[in-house]
Image (cartoon, rainbow, N blue to C red):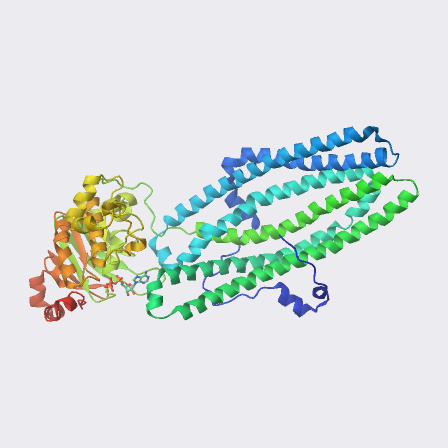
Length: 625
Ligand SMILES: Nc1ncnc2c1ncn2[C@@H]1O[C@H](COP(=O)(O)OP(=O)(O)OP(=O)(O)O)[C@@H](O)[C@H]1O
């Protein structure tokens, strides 16, 4: 770290000013909360296993670490010989061997330096490779509930930024610590060998180093924690704001979004400045301590030189070695700052790794292979974690293969929640959801989801080609299968007209396609998955009447022979359902076919009325209440 010139005024300022300089103000209504503190020992314990692949190489790095100070010491010793045996007696006979030794040592240290740099980088990057990939895999396996509560940008910042700091903590930090200790041992041994009394005097000041370092490391940790948290917030706001750029621009909210961003940005700036101030104050303080030690030694050494107890070369070498000794002492003292700062990042990773999926697979899950597709909700009660309102209350229904069950009801009635339970994104607090008579909690998660295909309200299209997007439903699907699915979804014609046909890149979130086209792509994806159970969550949302009509054909094709649960506000899609469940506040208010409900349920009849007497484009968007 670059340490700026010491500001003398800083040393003189009164305590409150010092407090303001050294402490970072924390913002209570933060975008992202700080991770809970974790002791250093625990941080080591958690991340040490990730060094597994590189431990053999670590041993090699330690060899390089020892070689470094030995070469340095040899060079310094040559310097003593140069002064005492060549320069002072003006005897040139040793000059050539000394010069050759210098060349040899320089070449050797060059080779060691190269090998050291390559090996250290390899080991640390291997560590990062493993850790980052594990963190990603872990986060990916967390339940939907986690992502609904967390800010994605903060998670991104942890996976990309904080992971690097863990490496500093565990590898670079430890390697530096060992390097410093080795240097200390080598130089101290030489110093003692040269003049034990002067050496004792010189190291008498070390407790002051430790004391200063201890005081500073606590401050560094507070500042680093705040810096990391702010980095997460900046990332979260960037992701949210740029991810919804169309909304931001359409509502002219740029200034407001910028203000939100800027608040965190300034917070990050302040936290970084605070930690730099702490580091920058630490440097000059240590300089003063170091200078005190050196001055005492120079004083005593000059006196001993005058007394003839020490040669000029001896004194010069002593001072040269001493200057090398303070480097590692200062380094070891400063390392605690590095450790504490990196541990602030490690805490954020540990917090992420400690998140457990709310949905856990049974210890010995049942295997059902391809299901027939009978779906059953049996007296299901559910409320979202952290809420006390029930999203579903005592919900029971059953759907057999080839049948279609439509869930209708006002917005917030619990329709999508039922779909989430069937995919086992959450487990119900009461009752059971079954597939082919098996409690979902007993099934292998991947197998359950293999048996279900979904077309969601917001059509999920990835940045990639049309072909990739369809084949996402069944990895490794053949070209024929992709085209057949597209044909069945009535998508083949429009895909053919795209600039590169099936190779057209559709842009992030499929922005280069129309809503109807995206929907048909999603149907093709569900089609190719060929799962026995189908969940259609508002498949015609956002489509005008013509497009809505247009995808009815492909939808019917997709639904035929499968168990379908359709959530829709559009009565046209619902009318053909085998049974319709009318939900009100999470409860089943009524159940029957379209004709039965029309005759019996005032609420349903009113809806139908509303739907039928509106112009078709409005009718397709009207909600069933
Ligand atoms: N992740 C969540 N955390 C907490 N509460 C939620 C969550 N998702 C939904 N809810 C609440 O659960 C209830 C049911 O929501 P759900 O999304 O199932 O309604 P819906 O009938 O599908 O509505 P819409 O027709 O508007 O999609 C609502 O009161 C909603 O506020």
